Image (cartoon, rainbow, N blue to C red; front, side, top):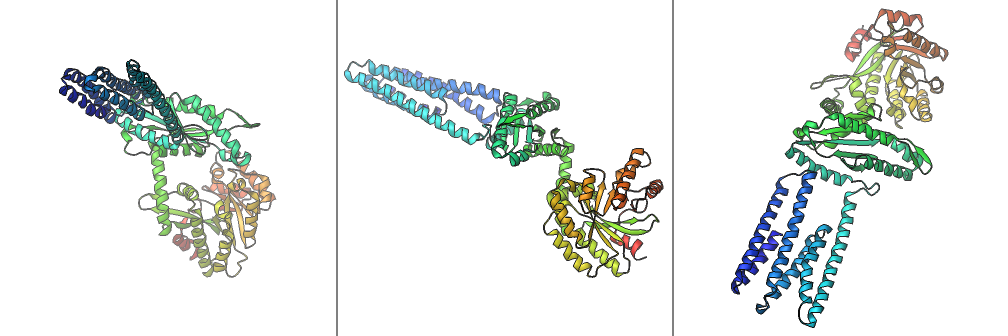
Length: 601
């Protein structure tokens, strides 16, 4: 605006000098220079200072006054020069006034607070001037000027409406009316810069609705969409005055607080705010006759300016939100450095797993199983991983990662092949164990190709039927939460090719007597946590006695794992446990160590 004003303004100075009316032009141009300098300071302030919301509002107020003043300056020069008709300068004044009106309607069209009063300010002097021309055409020009004003206003209003509509569609979620992911990311980029410059902070809240997919699948997407709309309305009502609320997509919502001073940005208020979010989301919903209840998992992350070297704010909040889901959903987890380190280790393990599998660094160990006479009758194959960088990684840490990443099928096939190769080798040496146990995941069991894979391996490594030798697949109680019909079908197909089944960690999860009757199970394995407390807990003794009694009535074999003391062994023997496994006898051994101690002796 300063450039568009100063360059044409020189014309008035030159014209004034030519026609000996220089002083008014110089005074006016001096005013224009002052206004332009003020505009330049506003531009520099906007370009170099990352403003918070309050500062931006103040800056916009200054900008508004700048626009009013600089366009009023053109009305002033029109009034000053339009009277010099003897030099025909009034034509220049009329033309520049019309030009200023067109410029205003073009450049200020995005803001009605600007273009409406400025257009009126620019055109009104023209309308009045033509009306006072002492000729009939003056009235005509006055009317035409008035019409021209209405045309400019009409065009500006229509363009403004179209701009606002396009802006709204580009920045808002169509379904809920909240800000969309695109707007939120743009806002966060700007906020990211402001926080670093202004040394402030903000709190990010990532919300994921629990079990929303179940509602969508059971009641339909129309009900699901109406539920999302209702949730968004509640979030806006609860937080819109203090937070930016957006929908990232699906059933994920995100909120970011306004900028906070670092000395007052404690996490206790953030946690309380999150609890309030959970409360408003938990309230019952009544949608098309359906009474719905839903909860949410919330991850909270305080954006610290000292750590703004990256833009992982959503990822870090997502990590906290996922942790809330792992801990049972319907809760709040605040991202911290301990959680970040756990996640970094998780990612490092995930990356190294691929290499470990490719290079056969993951090994199959074997833990012997004993009868009541302490004779080796079988073994369980277990996986162990020792990494150069990570050290010895516990199975409890890396197996869940294997399952979540889908590597479990590859790892399971590797363990199965290694175990069958070992059994075949031992059999060839004349050492035939009664049973060999292999842990099988639900993903393996429910995989359509798994039965064919097992059958192929049996044909390769057990060409002759070994009637006295059992191959036992250990499955956890999580099988009870799966599609039971499919599970039973897959288990029966495997039993037809000679596989037996054991329920691992029995008594810790979904146990049901009905399931024990439905599933084609041959064995139950008492969880080590019960065995470990035998010396101290009468309740655990009763629990194990009950489990063994029920298993005996169902003609099931009983294995106790985690046997570590002689007293535990004596008690388990008295209540007729069949097989024992634990550190009292032996820890899991490498293939070489197991063979040296139990096979080739």
